Image 1 (tube, rainbow, N blue to C red):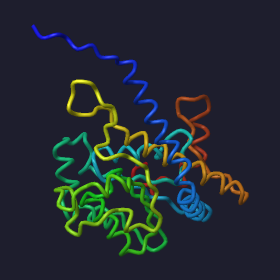
Image 2 (tube, helix red, strand yellow):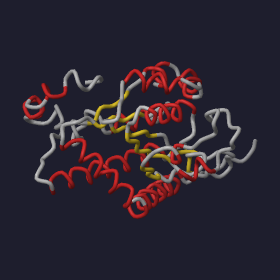
Image 3 (tube, rainbow, N blue to C red):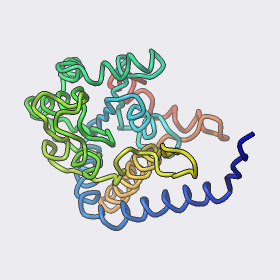
Image 4 (cartoon, helix red, strand yellow):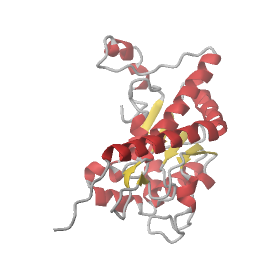
Length: 259
């Protein structure tokens, strides 16, 4: 019988922790300027009681839009675009096919009726798929202000003829008004295991969530500096949560489609 391989899982977990921590440190230090600019734009929207829209076109990219929507400690003005087409719950292979379909993202944004007074955050770590690029182009054509969260490295290292790409071969960071680099490496999975040809343990969900929560933190800071305390969700499972949230529900029901 072949000799069994002994794998140090503790060391692999430590490696994953260190890599994740290092990526977050890079976002914190290297993306301070675009995060600050983006936070100012979010603060401008919230100061006049306008929504901040967020869309994550792609299977796991949808998690990014859900991370800051209707979440304890999250801004009530954030409105997530939760389109059924790319949700994994409707079929993972179907989701991947939809995110690669030219024209799909345009339809989603058109349905949101975004215009010149709106702000849209687009989140997709790879920054290249057809639905994402179409969403960006349609929102830009409608006059919306665009903030993108994606990995420049991943986009730069993805072949121009990759089947996921938009027919124009554009990258998200080249289309948006403010581009925030979430630093996800090519391939996403970051842990190398002895004896395996493929890496394991993806990092993009951590990268996107950390980046977006830093944006929320900076936005709240800017609003407080202006003398504005923004409404923030409290956990409904915490004491007084329902009562605290209930004071603001009427202002957002009907405006936030997914609420």
